[in-house]
Image (cartoon, rainbow over all chains, first blue to last red):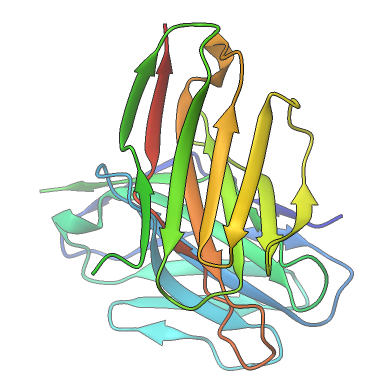
Length: 115
Length: 115
């Protein structure tokens, strides 16, 4: 069975600085999808970024980028020029290409942004 | 227009009562999900329906019964509510097609408090 691990329960970053959130996963599959979701205090789950495992190029969305290391099964999220609005819980998620369309979430990392 | 809407947003009830949470999506997705998020923010899949058919049924007490009248709706009925059922329940939807981006869209959550 697949698992997703976020080893950092909490991280802090100064405003305008860069922070990297870690995510590792375990799977025997070769093709899958990886996601980062953000959950601010409003509790709405918002997609931050998405990566397809067959693509070697790291996904980027404005200030958000990933470092996808398929062999190491690592999928970290880098937030550049951190803003106060980035403060939230961040969840890493995995989904198989096939099967029951099940998404597996990590336990989350709480990001604090310091002014 | 809200893509995934769930009602109610807040639900406060007594132990032993029966309650329902409703979810509707207007994204044309064919797969819908229910998640439970506990006080530690851990997000756990409960159920998933694909084209009105139950495809994921995790280890959930049978007091919880999902029902999907059509592809756009997935309701959750809970019988004999217990204190441990207090949590935030999220509805989500996605498209399972091979060309789909397989992004999951979430509702705003229903905070259930059992007294």
